[in-house]
Image 1 (cartoon, rainbow, N blue to C red):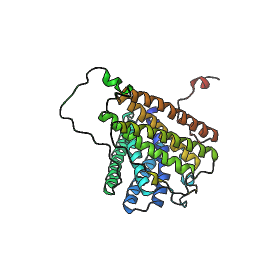
Image 2 (image 1 turned 120 degrees about the horizontal axis):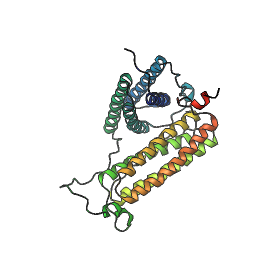
Image 3 (image 1 turned 135 degrees about the vertical axis):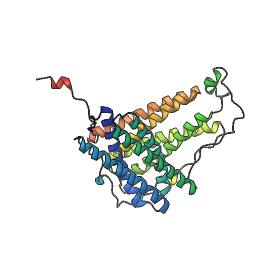
Image 4 (image 1 turned 90 degrees about the vertical axis):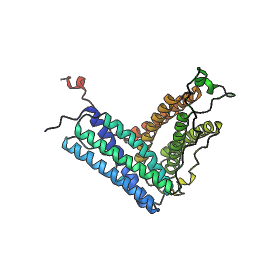
Length: 333
């Protein structure tokens, strides 16, 4: 039985996942080359193998459908002989963050697909990514590296919101409602992801030989640190524990590891993920001050992302996604 042609959504999702997998593979290759802890090496190897398999399966499907395989990223985008730039704990933290983003991305891709083989492909990716995430968390827990979210007292009864003050209470600095569990969850997770972003910016800024890229990464670090301070203060104001810092994530190496193209692409992915996280947190939060904070800093992320796209366009680093034919141009005959 012949499969129907791939839909625009399926092509777009497959294309995006191929590009991102090709980028992640180069990072996993470097992590595997420089990791020291044997248990963490096993986790990195699993992540590397899953990423490579996913990349090859999509390439095979594109060949079958006679669709050009994207250039993506290759061995030329990483120097595997470069000294160690990231510590073992950072590698786990990075894999935890990417695991969360990956399960969400594959879930969306599966939901946007209609052809059975494509749905099965993304279902398999989702299953594998979920297993990898569990392995990352289990390993971090065993090594005492996992940072747990804050604890709150268990509720003793079901309660209902009474009046609009529950929503607007955060606007009064002298009478702020304490955070609810959903708000705490988003503040905590966004703090953790910004720690990852700040560490990556530090590592990339000190290893690139481009002032333009270094300045961009320094700007990204300043934004991440600013957002960390905002989130941790909000948590502290409700007498909640905040995630500990991971300053040991980056070594003092100044030797280039990754190409500027790869570093900039990674931050385009992280910026998009951050914007999505903030939008979700804004929608889920029921204190108006939190909603206002998320909306305000989302603009900051959007401007940072736009500046990154401009740099990538300037250097010809952005591949063009498959697009619909321009009928107006085709009819000019």
